[in-house]
Amino acid sequence: MCHVWQHPTLPAEEVPIDFLAKLPAGFRRLVLTGGEPTLRADLEDIVDLVRPKTRYLEISTNGLLAAPLERIAARHPEVEISISIDGIGARNDTLRGEQDGYERKLATMQRLVAAGGRNIGLTTAIQDGNCDQLLDLYRLACRFGGEMAGCALHNGFLFHKADNEPANRVRTARAVQPLVYELLLSRHPRNWIRAYQHLGMMRKILGQPRRLPCPAGRDFLFVDPWGRVYACNIRPDLEIGDLASQTWKEIMAGSRAAEARTRVARCTHNCWLAGHARASLRGRRFPSLVRLQPLGWILANKLRAALGRPIDFDHAVDFRDVAHTPVAARRESGPGRDFHPVPQPKTEQPYGAFNNVMNK
Image (cartoon, rainbow, N blue to C red; front, side, top):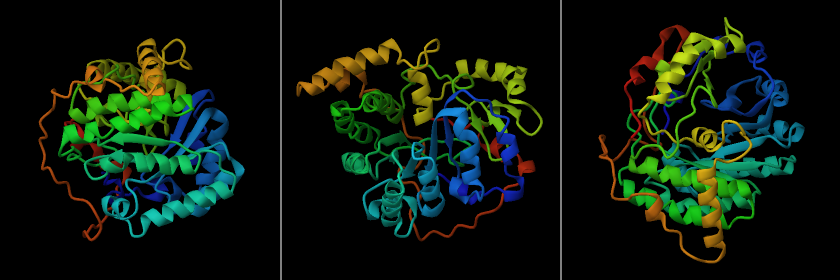
């Protein structure tokens, strides 16, 4: 699903913490991701720095290095720690190429809860190999009092991948339906919103256009390991600035940012990652509120689920409109493969190869 680990950055070149100090206060959400954020020796210092700058702070991690996460959970119990689990038991280990990964992740989650962490959940890349286990994964997250964030397979420069396409689009999209129903039965409004996000994910899996316009460059941004700022983490041609030489205000008000927003308005990708979808659902003038269109669907179908009535998914998603999968149906994954990671310097400009990689 992601080959970024085959192209590791050089620690001496990675964005220093004083660059991150340039980030202003007032963010709704910041996500520390990777690669793997726990490989940063100063991750705990980064958390201390950026936590006051945002309403919600999330760490997206593979969960294999428990010690730094445990210390963060003890000091910042409100921080969301999302552990990547892509199947139950051996299924996770096969898909992710991890040895005993599933058991190690569960042990990490238990340690984080014991340390006082109040928001320990998981993320799952929904695909042919695990779509039959989505309810089991959701219930696993509930066991730890957290949430499950699902996403579809995506291509893009962040992932160093161009073959992330489902082999059976209809089967994979249909498998999301029981999860949507169970999310609507939850007592937590955030799960109701996530149910609508998963509705948009079905369209992405089928290869259909986005359900809502993309707000990249306005409502969310991406900072790469060297401090370069992009409108999104999919298209490498949407770079808008560099924290090494600019302030945040200069980047956001610059001509490159304005040009990137114009390109986004014409973008034909159908990306629907969790951050993309979350930002799309929020209103521009009142970002704490959900847009009227999604809100109407959520309320109507929350009531249907509460009354035990079925949801008419075929009215919301056209399952007859299915994109052709342009790559081999079977992607290479799993342990036992011979990989030789090659460090990637900042001067290499490695993302250009993904300029024409599309999500459909």
